Image (cartoon, rainbow over all chains, first blue to last red; front, side, top):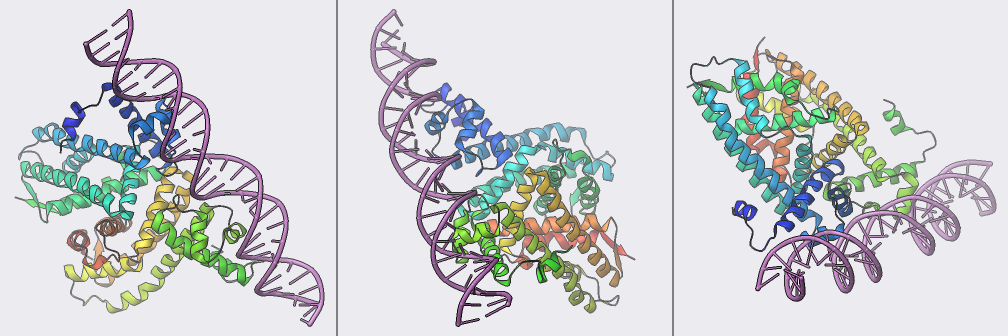
Length: 221
Length: 221
DNA sequence: CGTATCCAATACATGAATGTATCGAATACA
DNA sequence: TGTATTCGATACATTCATGTATTGGATACG
């Protein structure tokens, strides 16, 4: 909506205020990822940001508001990254490219990596989803983000496939959802296994199952 | 392990104690699902169970211990249900059965429903996973449950497929993991969309993507 | 350079959850 | 039935996070 405008030039928002808000959100990102929303106290966050609680109560009404500000910022970043990143993926491909499992796999992986294989984001998003499952208002905004992203990704994947002379045999959005789902669960599993920096490019579940999956759900145009 | 033995006859555990433990775990199941582990206070749980906090501190050392007791009980129940439920699925099938998308789909669905399409379990398990992602000790037990279940399910699915003259084109365990992943995320989405009683049999993401997925990942023996 | 405004720091009051120590009732057992 | 033991209820002390009201310093602006 007008969040971009707000970002660049807010009505009565001084640059000082914006800076502390950003630092608070940065700190919240770390602390929420480490301990979870509920276990995180306002003081942990402000301390991490180098403030006292006064700064928080001057900028936010509640921990939840801060959490949603964080979620919105990160969702926006990833959505924009997806829109822009496409330009760096598509140009290298054309109908002459050999369409093997490998190229299909790397094609999809490039898109997924735009989402960022970020341990912290995975944790925060899992918590966002959990909150959403318990609160229909939160669910509405979660689903909106999710669908925005998946629709965009589906369109991009479809474009990319067509540019190499392929198409999905079922609804592109359905396939995309499945891909995103598998990717996310692979990220979670990577974290569960103790990887501090998840490396999706080497994840057996992603490499082992996504390429045959994609392969089997596409056909020549 | 010996949990079954413990269940039937514990060393110095009176039946009274066992009953209150069970009631506490039942109550915790509800409260944890409704509010989450951290938001749930000990008093909420004991009140729901018809006790005071005294009963809790007499039976458990911490909320976490209660949570893990709950998780273990439910995981065990589902594992046993899977082992036993197979008998009710396989007999109806043989190589003469027409192998259509529909039969494959319902075959898989029957197995998945053994896992139980339970809103509460979905929420509690999501939280278990989240705890596990932040604590390697919890991760170990989460992964153990998960792998036990998936290996068992993979073996059963493989059996079932063979009984109708099919086989997986890639590692059965990998396929199973993907199926479980998609199923779980469908359940989550169902909850996000406000279904109080998730009906997986009608979920578009499950019905729309799993059958073609299974179809494309199997071949005649 | 002086003044007004804004914003974060500080101090304080409040409420809530925890854990423990003790008490009383229910159960087991002789 | 009487007694011992177990287990849950009660009461208390403590800790911790929250939110607000006020203060002091930084920044913008004339």
